[in-house]
Image (cartoon, rainbow, N blue to C red; front, side, top):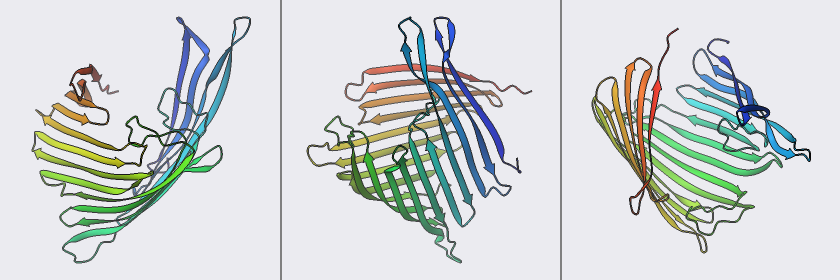
Length: 348
């Protein structure tokens, strides 16, 4: 449509069963239209969608033994548009999800909200500069409102500046102002301690500095540092990743993240770390093995995940995935699973 754009539809339906017979009064249905926007120059991209959900809210038992179903329905709608050229990126997004939107066969992390999210990134290219390739400011805003009262419940306002050097090194610094109105009790340290009370708004601020090296080299590394207030306390965060390519058969990487959260008594203080080594092997052009480990002090968990892939013909793959979870203290097995998956491409 109109060059490269297209219109798509979606229909997802769940029917309940009573024994071996379907119960057509017990259902959850989501139907909608998606309009995907692509300009001929690819400078303008976007998506507009409208989905509507119809589902059972509750079931009542009548004195005669019959069942009475109470139904509800609600829509979800969003518009995302982006303009991008060599000098700037402009983005607009809004989302609106009704409180009754309940797509059971899907994933709906949040309902009953309206989100307003614009952003702008600019790039200036200095002439005859042997050090800097481009630089420019960053502007970003994200607001969440409660649909019932149209009250602001979350705000993120960010300003920053970025530098991209001729040797492909990238440096970015940002300052972010946050506001969060807690609608439920919340423990920021997630340690099981005394939670912050609900129905209270918190405003906090933090600065962030990130760095990434030349991605064209075999040894690539990046890092991130942030510090500032956090709810009614402070937070210090460090993260980074080192990656080494042994061309053409392997990539070795190590990622880490550490957060130090300090809150006043009686709330919790925590020191949380996450370490993730990863190994990618390409034995041939068709046989691959990816293995990663994750050590998480917050969850007290050590995870191993290994995925074997055999591409036996174009677009057709056999996957074998092994995953295991261990307690970080005693290293006893918590759970273990092996999964087989087969994709086969039929040419019509």
